[in-house]
Image (cartoon, rainbow, N blue to C red; front, side):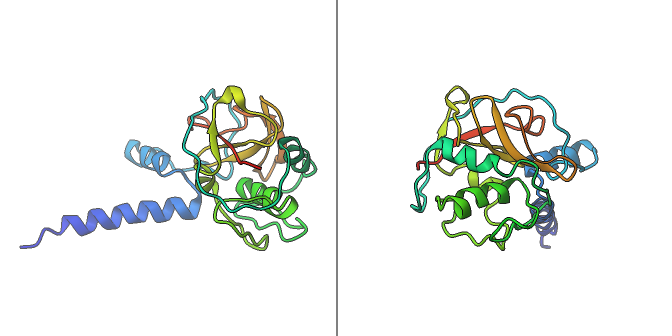
Length: 201
């Protein structure tokens, strides 16, 4: 008699990945909550801002598509132009940023549309959301928290922003706060490891 538990386990695992992808949740956080019996709420798109102190982690650089050039300060200054912009989870900004965005579509827009810089996956159509946070986790070159400078990407499983200096970033936070400047660690979801990426410009 065939073991029927294997297909059920595979289906359950697939459902978790699909659910986390649709909702934008971290798979590890989703699994922790499911196994502990906690509700699965607010893990990505509408989290409370809390202080966390996550270290920078160095990772290997990944291949990217060469685009334009910009200094880190130019990247930060461009991002700061959008302070106060509206937030929509999964939002696509459009070619003139007329529509609300979320954290990753904000970064995609600043890098690819405004500055013609390389982003994960190469080409970007601002009428779509574009690469999510998980695509940015290995893009560019990993740096330590102490080395973060204007224009660097600060990213974890479910949120990301653009550093404006060594301690602050601008990111699209949630519907009530929109796109705002916060401390880097204060602007990240509690309990997630923050990675710092320098995208060679």
